[in-house]
Image 1 (spheres, rainbow, N blue to C red):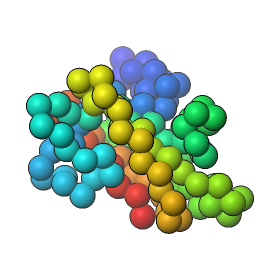
Image 2 (image 1 turned 30 degrees about the horizontal axis):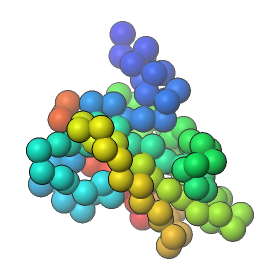
Image 3 (image 1 turned 180 degrees about the vertical axis):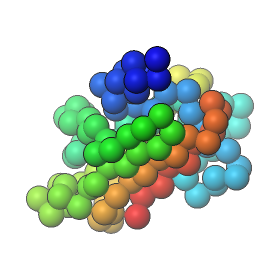
Image 4 (image 1 turned 60 degrees about the horizontal axis):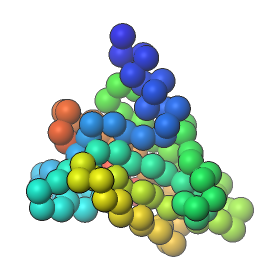
Length: 115
């Protein structure tokens, strides 16, 4: 059942089994050779604080986080891109963003953008 998979994704705040492709080169998580983005986490503040955020809305194929309140409170957002080769890239979004959105294109491609 798709709902069980979605609950797992939301419980871990990770978009599982997704990657970025060259068609989506302006995605927050950059492409890397010989690997792909396997999961994405959105955090309120430093990743070390473990304040992992659940999407405000999510379905099987898309969802978003409203994030203006984080910046309004004087904090910042951080994104962790987890790659299939078990490496991570942490991205500090110092400039305020109102929203980050994901769209799952297929099992090996997702678009993840913040504005």
